[in-house]
Length: 579
Ligand code: PEP
Ligand code: MG
Image (cartoon, rainbow, N blue to C red; front, side, top):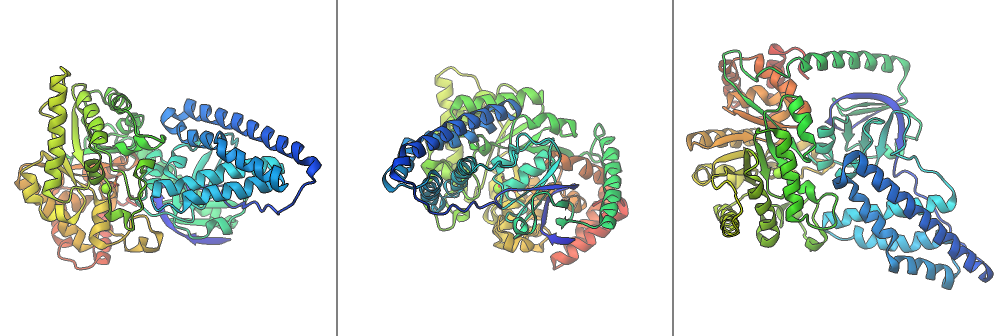
């Protein structure tokens, strides 16, 4: 039995058999064929290529049927590689001219091809190197005659072990059979983690070398609540975990009873709990779990499955789909927040030394007005279909906000000229996720209708901790007194300036911080849907008076350790089942 500690990014415990991805680095020795066999070898390759193309096309259609076209589009890139004429010609030349085996030709040519992507400093393009490797391994397995664990045709429950998972791969997982996953890389607020939570798949990331420690077929316990993976556990450990899982399921069914009840404190203060989504289809689950609306729609995920920017119609289709499902409940559409760890498209592939401090988010939109306008037009057209609000991400200066609003005004004028109806009074808000915006909240409050505090980035930029880097994940803490001071001030300044203040960073969904945020005066919390019932239970177990007293005490501490210990104790006092 071996215990590995990582970062629990999506709660839940799974005891199951492991399937290891990325562990099989197929070694292809350099071998030559006789000149007389060259034609047969080229034919062997071509036949295998055709079969792979056929199977990947089926895979794409399969995923489209299960998860929708948006996710299935990820496989279009794979199909593009398999159809790339110049790549195929190079492999055939390697066979015909150098008399290499088909395996060796595929391996050398595709390695070079993948390297071109991997070396790009743009994160999106560099990630595409993994897709090339994926296709390469598929071809090699077929040529060598190995079968891979087929993730789409699993028949029993498994825990997936991988070096890293793209958010897109996570979104395409077969939820019925993949019960959880563990990875070497990753951090708490990486988008993979966010997608895992949204899908309710337990996950532990940042385990450093889990792919080297686990063999396919090993029994593992994956504990997403505590960030632990136990490899080949002994009987006693399995029994203990089964017991704690039984208790957890009981708590979950108790939480289900809360779904129809309001998020109201014992002394009658009503709080609005909303959900964060990446895809319109998530709206149904969000409502089911008690969300009163969508406080953050991360629209950059519209770019997820495509090799190109979505068209105005594709934007519009997604927004109207979400609105239809919401039936008049509010929808806060955040304009695209691309760059840094999120998907940047090929066209934005200029190397940046510090992408988190670079041309990301609103900055990228203001550098590409036609793209920005296409999205704004779609949002404005959708604004007559329901309660739509618009939100700009990563605002760091007043000028940026004013520019974004000017582009929005241009779009409104254009639509008016075209006789297209829209809601001229659409509420316009901004994310507060950069310290400069938090510090200047009073000035910003004069120019927007609402704030939403994005703690994932606010913590990252306040504490200088890369939110995706597992090596510094221990330093990423929303309970740091400096972060808390900013959060308190934003709520205060926003409230005084008469703008609504909500929070949509992960902190809003962490039960540990519920009492504190309530006491600081936060009235709208937006979180991943699975977190709603537990946050609601805490709200319903306290009075506002008590929460305010807790907040006052917390704000007197000078270390995050004190903050967290105190909050843990106070929360357990009112809700012994918490955490
Ligand atoms: C945040 O930064 O807290 C946030 C909600 O935005 P994202 O996680 O999409 O960057
Ligand atoms: Mg952010």
